[in-house]
Image 1 (spheres, helix red, strand yellow):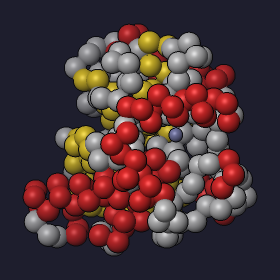
Image 2 (cartoon, protein in one colour):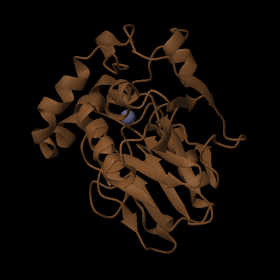
Image 3 (cartoon, protein in one colour):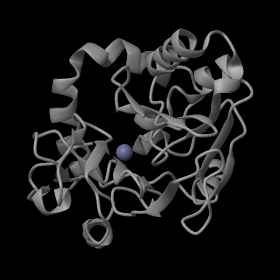
Image 4 (tube, protein in one colour):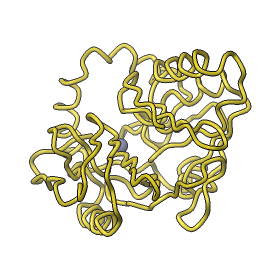
Length: 253
Ligand SMILES: [Zn+2]
């Protein structure tokens, strides 16, 4: 069971697993509040329900609400893909697509989610999130100490049946989460659904890399895509064949 939460700038997902709940891409404080509401309604006030908080990549619209969620559920573990540790330590700069593509990609997204400005600014101003803006990229401040231990070859803690798939392109640290039994893919900003048919994101640090990642994803069986932006696409066989590869002029965030 996956809850789709539209409380933030990007989509947030709450996975009900055998070992508890996992929150993916908590992009805003509002998304964190909505997760708390779901957990409280379903499980009462106990904190133990939420085991893991993770993200598909280290961009603010996917991580901006994690500090707030961690405050509410201090027992939950925050664990990212191993590459994220370099952004947090400052060893590497946050991955940002070229500025021109960034502006082209941002405008259509912002017009669709204008009502989220306040929510977004609130998370942004918290200074607890990674800030993926070119002029602030050296000032990554986060208000928690995450683990960065997730790897493609390892099982994900608290999330049996799911695995991480490295899908660089949008950023070098972009990953998807895949459930082989149910053929579900949480695709982050690798595959979006802003157009209603699913599309490979062209708002990328490396177009070449994302095309390679798309080929990799095409080799696995997927019947539902939960994208980073846009509505989930469910119930389709051979979904990847139908995913439209957008031309470079159309981009998403
Ligand atoms: Zn992103």
